[in-house]
Image (cartoon, rainbow over all chains, first blue to last red; front, top):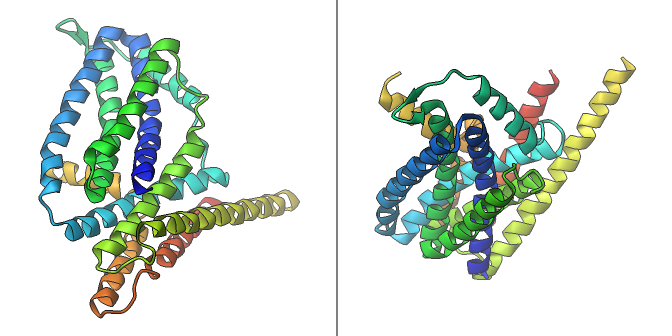
Length: 250
Length: 68
């Protein structure tokens, strides 16, 4: 059960980040040329591989309880940030993530930036692609390594990320447009809920406490975090509607 | 800004984000769980409500700042 949950969480988190990276790579490629953009992608992939190669083995030598406590705490803080933003988006306090708008803005900025060429590479396009892939990829690497190491299977978590990579890159190459039909905001909400759930579960185990029902408790925590988040969205939506009504009356 | 402070700033923003108080609340909840567990008291129930309470306070702070 937790293995399927692990692969699904890793897949969803990776797919969301890869859709965002694809938008930036497409904007850089169309505005500044594909050679520079794809060189940036390749360089970022090498840099990410170096980060994973350095951190991956280090995580496997830490005792499991200490690892779960540390990684659980970091994952919980990180996941709560995702969930907080997702709730603010869902309740209307923060603008929804719009891949088309981001693509249009990135494309306009890339088209109007001055040419910085050298060695057959346009360095603006290279840097734009490199930053996009490295920063989004770092989140993927972080999630895969933390999920995988605490659950005792980095390859399983990497499988979810690998499937997401093949899917997003394949569709991206086929349509050469941002994947704006992907329900990104709903996926971000789901990922925030899952990161927070895993963070709670492993922090408690790492702290030396035991869940009743063992791994099955993961589902109960997921339900609790999901229901609480939905309640918070409803509360904030109502609060926003009430504030708007007061503003209209004034 | 030196490389070390820029590197630290990057990881702080990456993990903690824009509400350090939420992170501090979560860490306090985990510390309380560790203490209860080491005192041989059932502690699994503590963290989920603490996390939801921290999230609620953080969201209230964010939406109040937005409304002001």
